[in-house]
Image (tube, rainbow, N blue to C red):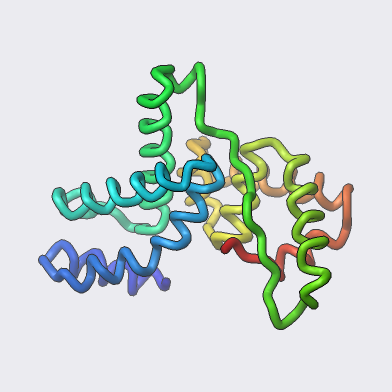
Length: 194
């Protein structure tokens, strides 16, 4: 979604337009669900966390009053909500059991580009290469290349100091992937999360 469209949706929602709320939900729910599944295999927890976020937004519209990037806000909110839910379930604090193990669970290749029999093999190779990265690197690469986030948004989601730090993190991850397989960048251009 284009930033101007996002800004208009937020404005419409803040002015009480229920259709803007529905559009906001429909636009981001699938990406949020896939992002949440990267942190936990408990899909019900992910669904509950997404529902909690949207209920909170609906009940307290003012949360969006100073938001300039809705997608980034929703990703951060989901990650924080999953951390809170995980903390309650395990009765540990974030430092003892952080929900930072970012895994890529379901990669699909665009149907019109790759034959069916190669899909599983390529998907496994990509997953294997991504598992060689640290959790932060893996999350940063996915945010950049799968969720099409800007570096400043990645820095915000990963609680990094600045945009340059996020850019360096992604760059180091890509260099590591390149050293493993030079074709990974081509493959990244063909994949998307389900």
